[in-house]
Amino acid sequence: MDTDETRDLEIVARLRRLDAGGAPAAPAFDYDGMLARHVAAGARARRRQNLARGMAGALVLALIGASVWRFTGDAPEPPAITGVSAEREDYFGPRIVRADNYLALAALEDHIARVDDALSVARVYAPRGAEVARLERTRAELLDSYSQVRYAELVSANY
Amino acid sequence: MQRLADIQIPDEQLAAARAGDGAARRALFECVAPGAFAFIRRLVRHEAMAEDLLQDTMIAMYEHLADFRGEAPFGVWVRSIAVSRCLMAFRSPWHRARETLDNWLDDGQASSAAEGRTSDLIDLDRALTRLSPVTRTVVWLYDVEGWSHEEIARAFERTVSFSKSQLARGHARLRSELRSESATPMTSGLGIPLGSEIDGH
Image (cartoon, rainbow over all chains, first blue to last red; front, side):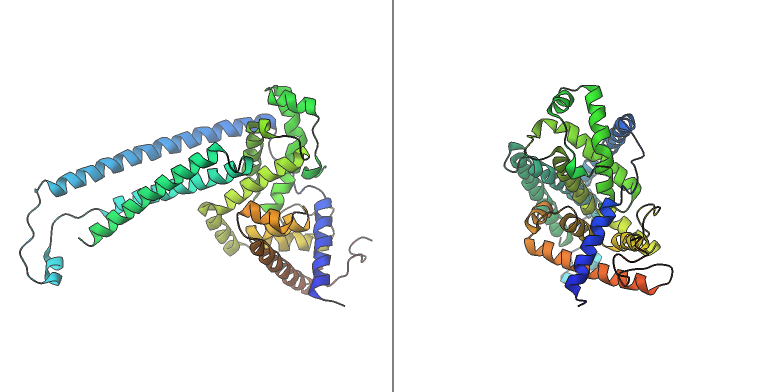
């Protein structure tokens, strides 16, 4: 009888034969090659980290600059218009740059994803260890920051 | 070549590797790396990505050697590291984008050299590469590595139902792929019974 179940058993048998059939290919590097690759990957990661730090610094400076510019009163006062829609239409004061929010959120999301990955690894080795607790705390703090930036974005969008 | 899960390492060699002895570490690599690469290659479609994951796995193995308590064969412990690394890679947005692009660009080539293998195994290999990475991993871990649904659910941080549904979906997709493979000339799929002359028996 040719049922899905029998076919599944055939598939399992074939998969095991495929596994027994030998290695698909050998790795292209040996122990020394692996160490060299590891060193190169570390250097690449450091370069990326430095770049990210530079960008984050520039982002913070830009945010501070935008805030100072916005609140020191250099900008002209918005004209007194009674209608809400007209006020929105004619208001020409500076606004928070959306790209800054976007980059800040993207950086936070990226950081949270990295912490998630680190948590997955840490849980494999010690599900209730101190490292897991520390990473969970970091994740909670990052999520808190993330929600604050989101809130700020929402407020500035409705300003 | 020995399967990864069957690899056992003598205690003296492990102790030397833990102590940082270069020769012992090199010997450990030579013993474990081929099996680990073969295992990772079954879960990951791209050779370059599999090599990166092998490197990550081996580095993590060296870094956590002190955590290995010898309750299971050494290869089983390394396999759990490899699975964890592969799942991390699957969650990465880069990997997902690459898979989508590859699915669009090609139609799933067999992941490995076909020499010395019968056509039904080549078809199966090709069908496996067409599964999504997650489904392929669940199918391989359950059917070949002998993991339970509970173990798979724990590794994926999902429910047992997730593992069962992925397995059922994977089998259904393999059945359908093999049926279509068998319909095309030059290849034979599930339509040819196991143990036929094409199978070499």
